[in-house]
Image (cartoon, rainbow, N blue to C red):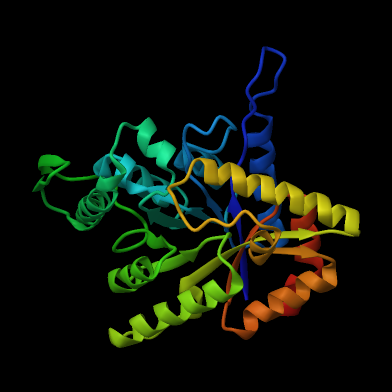
Length: 323
């Protein structure tokens, strides 16, 4: 199996005595140590207008991490294409890929937080069309060596050559977030790797992977288990009190996320929260990872609310059993 990380740093607001950047610097140090511990990748979110300091300039933070590491793959989970100028984004991703010697995993998506679309004064109904046009332009930007032009609904370019070229060919590795049957099939049809979210239940993940695999094979391609990364919130706790505190914090985080999201089938219940987590003793966590492996999941991204302490214990006591 292969293990990476998924998550975000946090910058604190406050007065002149507040160390605003402490959370970001701690996150960078965590990634440096995680590479030494044997983790394969780090995937960062992109969020805006939350008021609680999540990462917004994802590629900037990944560039800093990339400069201080040598093997850790640098992923976005996800860059929301509708909000970006596709040529500028293609240039930035290619630059990071070039400087990191081909370590970029460019995770892309359409966005799901209504408040973010409102903040950008962008109708959420345009998300699909903007995503598709942005992706079309980015692929053209990465793969065209001669000048090209584009006349689309949202973007127009005249006689441009986009630089620099990326190290990975024909372009940086592309991943796409999926959370519905329609999006799962779209990822397969586009030929991209698939990212599955940390709030999805185990049963939902099994169904999504089966659908993706079936679609891949129906298109005449061979399914690679490493083409699917599953995010899980993982927390190794030592007592019932620690478990209760961790679960209450998780439920609060899910509610906070939902406040910014589109309308969905969100269930604010203890059962729904537990369905997307792997919290418990070391033995329980190991057993849950084995359960994932038993259904064909080979690549897991850990979101660790306890930070480096869980990453250390997981690397020392869990990963060797699945190497």
